[in-house]
Image (cartoon, rainbow, N blue to C red; front, side):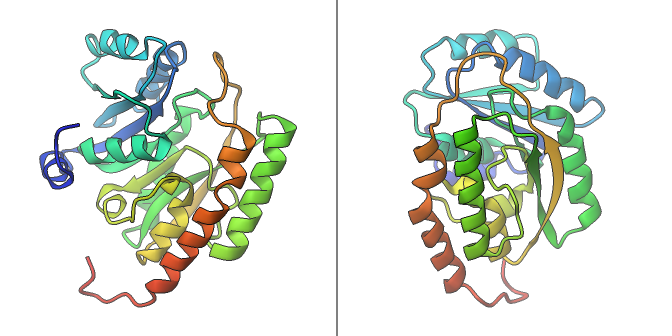
Length: 251
């Protein structure tokens, strides 16, 4: 990326109803299927899709270029080296033109059919609510990953009081202007409910069914996804403790 943070924000300020941001690493086989599903789910909406190819080595960049040649709503962005999921999501938000940014994982385990439900939930909740978050049912991960995720979510909920059962679900819809206010750090995408609450906004939830990935394997293990985030958890706790008052003049 050559644009500065402020240049990217100014250049892409909300010109569409929704931008779908898809972080992806080595998902060449899954992405065409997922993109077709997103197009079907958002039929009738004003939308764009930004797929951030996070340093893939399996030809994901070629697949995206070919797909974009016949689908003008797709905007591929590439990280030449892998920067991680949080950085990929942030890149997508900076490039987004939608008033609302919806996120979905690139592996196909999240069903795009729920995106309209997230958008509806956010709209119905009103301007005081900035985030509609999916919470997975019927997890298809291994037993060890499910237990690790359950432990991490319970620990996070107990400390942050974010009223969110499953903060790791990739399906979310967030007002872009609020997204840009959130403090950025690695693993930031796993704490979005708590960070949104920190800014003085509410969070609403919908249940979503998890599904199996069609191709490839997960890029994350038990420890890097669920357990290493304990330090980040206490960092977010500290951030929330440091901001207690919200004034009408706050952005």
